[in-house]
Amino acid sequence: MPAQTRPARGMRDFLPEDVRRREYVIGVVADVYRRYGFEPLETPALENIETLTGKYGEEGNKLIFKVLRRGEHEASGETDLALRYDLTVPLARVVAEHRGKLPTCFKRYQIQPVWRADRPARGRFREFYQCDVDAIGSQSPVVEVEMLAAVSDVLATLGFDDFTIRLNHRQVLAALLTNAGVLVHQHADALVALDKLDKIGRAGVARELLNRGIDQQTQVRLMNWLEARYPSDWLDWLEREFTILDDGGRLAFQNLREILRLAAVTNVGPRLRFEPSLARGLSYYTGAIMEVSVPDLAGSLGGGGRYDGLIGMFSGEDIPACGFSLGLERILVVMGERNMFPADVQKPSADVIVTLFEGQPVEDGLRLAGDLRGAGVRVDVYPAPEKLGKQLKHAGAKGIPFAAIVGGDEIATGQVTIKNLTTGEQRRVARADVIRVLTELLRPPSGGR
Image 1: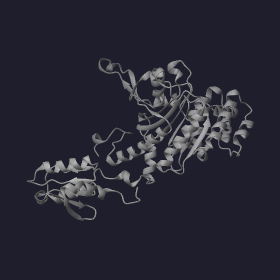
Image 2 (image 1 turned 120 degrees about the vertical axis):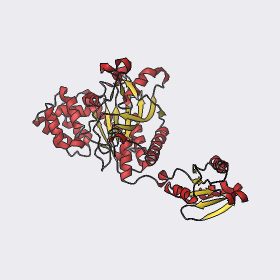
Image 3 (image 1 turned 90 degrees about the vertical axis):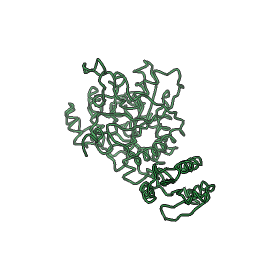
Image 4 (image 1 turned 45 degrees about the vertical axis):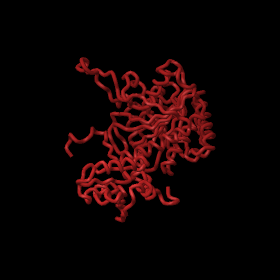
């Protein structure tokens, strides 16, 4: 393929079949989110550069797509805008900007593309959609539980039955690092490395920790903690094991206990488990963090956590917040590989094709198409008079099941020939009966979906 016809690396074209699959998943996600009381929100693709920088940590800042100043300022090489990196920071800006117009407890969902200058890989792209839910204004663990239940409902509705939601807490993780011997000023570096554990493995994390100044003895203690086989009463056991634990750490353990207790009465309870190695690399997380995993995917289907300090970076006011983001692209990859899409997602673009004949009034075909569309039938009109065989072959290639044929004989008798393009059967019906007959033919069998 010539290079000039390819999309930019890490970007993709979406053909009709791709778009239908995407629309199906997005429809399921939005429907479930709405059932949990989340409201829709959209933000611009471009943000001011200062809105995004300094919010994602060292690794994240490197992946922001920056936009050069334009016009007379272009030669300066300076940047003033950036493509949206995620949907969370723009939400924080929106809440700070429109706080007076929003309810005290604001629940929103947002399904839009984001851009990251990342290295493309399986299920990892430079332009991709996120499907976010966030709740602003409450510190209650009910927020986390409702959010996790919504995500679990989305995945179950899509047909996933083997996913796990891993749970941790930033303050528990900080206590773990401290007790392993990682110095406080090294915590951020350690979290960046640990967040890559499922991608580069223990050996890769060990190398990165060493490169970041964390000695081998400390690494061994840390990895032993992370890979320990925890007993069933892991929360009590782990809290007892930590010799260094401040009030923040104790509150974090209480918070995790409460989330697990409340989640036990919801659909997410059996899916939820503690994962001490879960780090979530973004620097704005302050509390509980979570991530969805399936067995055959390196990486996650989505993740999130509590970020109580982020909105205050814009407003100067402490406003609690928690969010979760499902990765549409990874969901689509796994669903495609597992053949999880319902058959009707792949249905053809039209139910019937209306044919046109040389020497016959085009108006008759257009009028029939209009009547059928008015009755809710999806109609494709062949654009120019051609041999009937060519028109039917075109319809067959598109998977259109029926043809409505209006030739000279049909016009003379006030009839239309309806042809089943799957079986080859055909019959003539009165023009006045076409809508009724086609509607009956298109109706699913009794008991069908």
